Amino acid sequence: MAKEEKDDAGFPNYIGATNNYQVELKKLKETYKAQYKELYSREYEYVVDKFDKGKDVTNVHIMQFNMLADGLSGCHSSESVKDETAKAKTFVNVPIECLDFKYRGFRVIEEITRHEPDMLCVQECDQFEFLLHYLRAWKASFTGVFVAKSKSPCLKVAEQCGKKLRPDGVAIFYDAEKYEAVFTQKFGQKLEVNVDVDVPAVCVTFQHRITRKHFLVCCAHLKSTKNAKGEQIRLQQLQHLLPTVKRISEKYNECAVFFAVDLNTPNNASYSVVYDSVVFPEKVLSSSPSSEAAVAKTGGGSDDEKPSLPSDYIAGYGLALSSAYYAHAIPNTSKQENMEPMFTTLKRRADGVTKHTIDYVFYSTNKAKVIRLLSIPDEQHINVNTLLPGFEYPSDHFSLMCGFQLLN
Image (cartoon, rainbow, N blue to C red; front, side, top):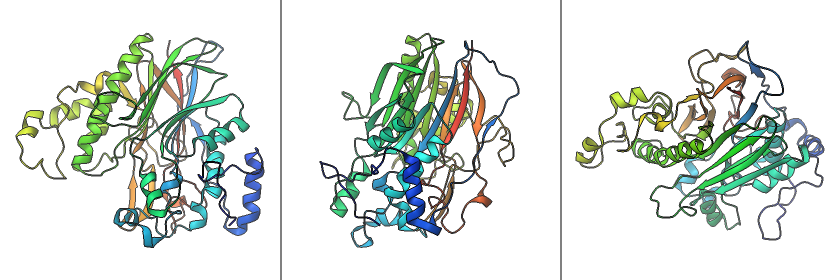
């Protein structure tokens, strides 16, 4: 591999010699030769038979993508400098060459542009300028907004390996030719005043330039700890975020809300409550322990127990949200009606294989309907040696993409 280039501030610089990502992909093919693989095949399928057409119709195509931060890929640190946490998160059997952002970055751009979203929500984004550079080269009208995590783990990796790495965070990119951003709200302890909850999130209210309809897009990345204490923090993050989202939407005639998020929690663990708190509130209201009972516990309960709901929680955080992927089957895949995909992340680390559905696009069911969904490859089509990421895919999470139509 070529020597890592740095920008004027000493951070890794992954911008290629040209502004054409297709030219850069061709160079990768020539460099990696037989190692280079085409991305997994995916289809953007219609999942309903009837939907409106015409200039007065507002369709929005939103991609949700945890891109795997460059700083968290594992390629910057040798085993000798990794602490126990970093060693536990190291991908097993994944060649270091395909983790290098010199390779991965252009495959991320390829994954995005081949599906042609007009709205893109990204978690673990520590290469905002790289993405914006090549998205604008693909479509000049693209722009974006970024919020860094208050406590990015990328900075801990940078300290361990003695390099300058950028913090990861969340970003929303969008086609400004189609949509005008009329209001932006950023979240995080370094951005908000007198808050105890830290949630990396950004919320943008858009207006369609032709139909003049408003809608709101929120992108967030919740706490990653996979136990009841982590679930409690995630509930607090949602309780801080979503009521604010509701208040903003009310200022724009209760416009449609689209919530693209890495919840960072499965819905099949003994402690699981976060997913249901958003889309099936009746389940958590009937089964969750009361706040008073939780306070009465000594030691805070076990890591397997369901945490209590926030004392000010109301059903669905006051929003009528559903998961875009839940209701519809996707043709020619294992995804059936009334179920989430079998997985959105599939990876092998030191403690074994992790197979979870933790990435979602939630939407206002009374304001929009789903018309298209991007298929997720079935497990038998994934490289069994590497799983995710690999030469065939640049992240440990599959992107999601949903076509919505705003309702009149």
